[in-house]
Length: 410
Ligand SMILES: [Zn+2]
Image (cartoon, rainbow, N blue to C red; front, side):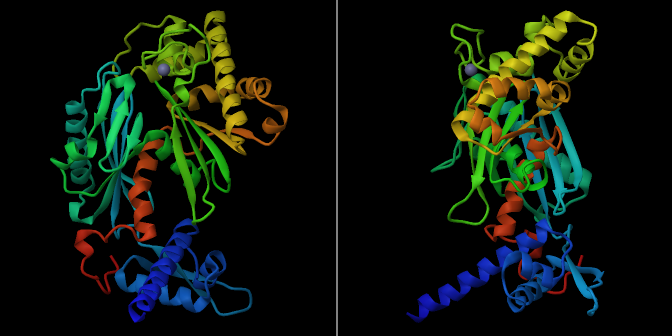
């Protein structure tokens, strides 16, 4: 019995710590009173946790805040240099690796172009390994200070018992990505679907903040969506990736990279839009972005470009209308590099098409907005995976900070 009671006290301390750390992270900087109000914990409990966090060097005192009529209060913040996180985005056209401090400021990056038609696993693994080395060198960061690496991948990710990636468009069939990377790095790794990592970035820092039920749509060369809702039994949110891009919108339609025909992706993915416009079949590496930007710029003077974009908005509205009908989200966020480019011009037309292609009552409860985190939201979101583990207390401190580094104030 005594053992169980001790366990409960420890659990409570761990829980309080996670709640205070997360509350501070999302309302930085804050005083102890504010943290108490945000977290729902007593000021005494908050003060106990904060004392530990100060001792460990995770939190620092950064100044004073004048309270109405009372004594000035100490403001607390997370020390951005306590540790670092790395995000990796494996997209159709490139691999991007970003190194971030705990304030999510990007400190170094590395980009490796990929041929959209070729995603050899060995090449991808080699580029990620090179990228990890490159960003640590550019940022001047000791690997022992890194909390972990998050990797956003296309396709379906199985987590148990081993991380396996299935991506039909690249002929990735049960690719053991984590195991393959393990030969190159000892850093903690988290592999997740890229639309989910982008979704987490928008929920934490962008257009999803404050929403309870959200669909996040990623449009790049390919197309995907994740669905995010408040967790009923835990703090935070739960999300799941979908293969929305491979839902059929036209019977006997255009061939899709997945092998099927008529998929949404075969109409609204950047590669498909350029193909429908008659752009060269093989874009130069990394060239799809400039080609799509040119197409959009040409739409004012070119009826052909305008027609392709109008049809794209129509199809996107059909797809988003289905998401609204199926999932009843309060917000649909359109992101991804192509989504942001297209949305700048087409958002009103996309909304109008979604209105016509969903049920009135459900559409009335949903807003359709552009992502706010920017075109690198997948990298950014991937880096939030190890960050989330850190806030929840699920990850160990960075190697250099073990054992407890009392008094380390950077
Ligand atoms: Zn498909």
